[in-house]
Amino acid sequence: MDSLRARLSEVDLRWVGGRRGLEAKIVPSSGIEFDRLWLRSLRNVDLSFGTASDPFRLAASFPQALALVARWRPDALFTTGGFAAIPVIMAAAAQRIPTLLWEGNLVPGRSVRATAPLAKAIAVSYAESCRVLPGPCYLTGTPIRALPRAQRSLARQRLEVPADAPCLLIFGGSQQVRRFNEAVWSVLPELTERAHVLHVTGEPPYAESLRHRDELRAELRERYRPYPFLREEMTDALLATDLVVGRAGSSTLAEVTAAGVPIVIVPYPHAAGHQAANARTLVEASAAEVVEDTDFDGATLLRAADILADDERHAKMSAASRALGRPGAAAANVELLLALAERRALPGQEHLEWTSRGGS
Image (tube, rainbow, N blue to C red):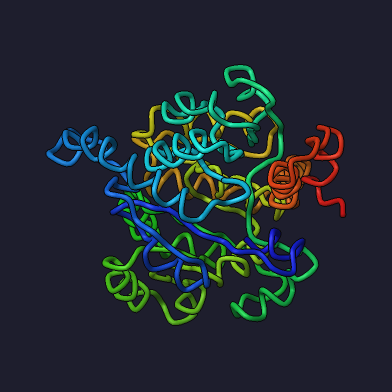
């Protein structure tokens, strides 16, 4: 949104979401009009009444989407192609509104594959994705927040991390964060002897993390910083850290590489293999190492932290991570979106590559 607003002095942004997720809280606070469909934004992994009712919600949401698109008459639609996007993409196609469909996973999901033929252009985070999606398809990267590497020292000051101390950032995202928390708690004294630890715990386990911190020796206590969540502060955490331990969501990997930080990836196992596929690109480039979800525990976390003590290994992984970074991905996607909205020729891949790599 920031990249789009930077290009246009006046732009009317509207967001269509579903009945689950954080959209209803986050989107309106950003000054964007928000409408909900009867569909759910997030779907359960296991079969339930909710998943059984999804086809009916999908059918009921199509006339909703038709009415919204007819009322707004947008110049273009940008979508990440999830389940809740299906009726909106269909409604836009029916009313000849051009759609830019963005896919962040290496292996496109079923919703993306089903709706891709309706899009006027497709943007992806991995070049390999274009092989299974119809054209025109462009490599742009994953839109992320600004991560100015030059502000690393300021980020450390704000987080009270000493300038020369090794720093480890651990977060499991919203899915099965308990495994990450238990691994940290089980080896916390040893871990804090090796590094300053920034640990995103999730809201309910935060109190337990504070209890574990209080049990540390006094000199180690200040080296452990648990947080229930990080929003704007995540920028500082990514800039301040020397190593990340986390999942392999598209945004996580994009932000880590934009910051030029190595990562030990623990792919979420219940996402149709998407995260394992996402991780493969970083592993092949020597920017990451992978630990299977079932193998991740305190002992493997300590082995991951060994990277911080091996200067040559850490430098190689950091350089590989920086080489993969696309800090200008949001701007590259805006180039495509504006071309569609203004009904002009789409930019070439060479220009988008330059833009996504941080050109201006």
